Image 1 (cartoon, helix red, strand yellow):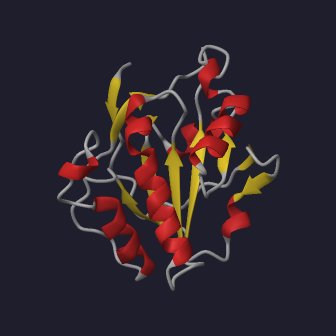
Image 2 (cartoon, rainbow, N blue to C red; image 1 turned 90 degrees about the horizontal axis):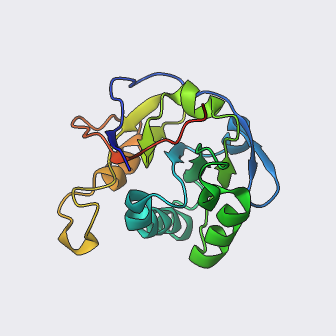
Image 3 (spheres, helix red, strand yellow; image 1 turned 90 degrees about the vertical axis):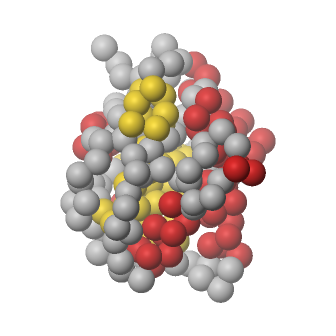
Length: 186
């Protein structure tokens, strides 16, 4: 497992379109979420210990936005860019199992060609991008200040960034996400 940090400096770039298959056997494009004010794209996978450690926090954040008065404002999307031949834990079959076991409330998509991850310049799992209503990047960074222990978190970066993006504002201080390197195909 190679530790990587997200590549910063892409703020205000436009979201890149995609056409990917989800664990629900539906295809999704960027346009599938045009009615959402904020779009949170998380490059993630099944086997990464960093993703495993924060997955429930991502689920909880999405659920908070689904059950609160803001029910249609924010949409999370998980995209798995890993080489599923070398890393079978990240296969579509295992993605479906994870969605069922964890009750993931957002689309989980497979980037089989890895073209989407390359277009977004994603480098690690999790690598998190928050886009506003105009689909310009307003936040790229970590979920919070303690990926290992949710009880020790004192700063909720992603939650704050989502709230600010909902108001069209960029979070001033953005600290890179860290995680496993994306498992690129040769």
